Length: 194
Figure 1 (tube, rainbow, N blue to C red):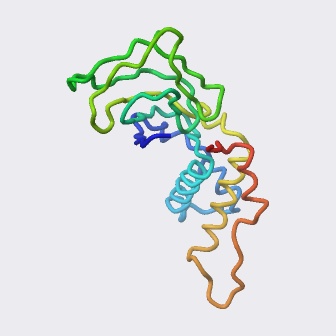
Figure 2 (figure 1 turned 60 degrees about the vertical axis):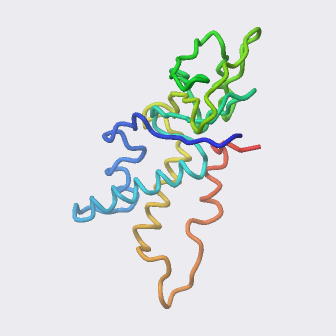
Figure 3 (figure 1 turned 180 degrees about the horizontal axis):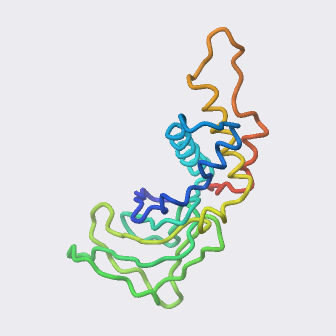
């Protein structure tokens, strides 16, 4: 895939975390409120790490993919659900909206992709960076739609981070946390790159 930049245009709702504070506290067996801010921060960090590990947006967000030019097959990172628009800078540098009849969107394949419709050709673009901009949604939907395996991985990581607040514990045996089994919880959801 050619050079690309991905920006979050509309993030997921902050009141719809993949793992709620109550779920995290239940998993941690924490009954007080003193660490709520810390636990929420750890949930956010673990969620971001899960997304990075599997190359997929979890809760639906609107993303902007910027590429330098059109190609025969444009991959849509992070589990695309729907393309909203494709804009590009024409040869003179003027922004144009690409007619959706020109391209076909495949969101059933991972990663999603955009290909040229039969009988059409891609327009010429300005020879500069990020001349093509694709706005699309990605994610499973609401937090409740995120698979249980991903949620379990996040909770296990929150537990490891909560109990081990430093990278290494002096005087203790150092072992990898989470275990190999825990890491494999994400395997069914990974978007593999060619």
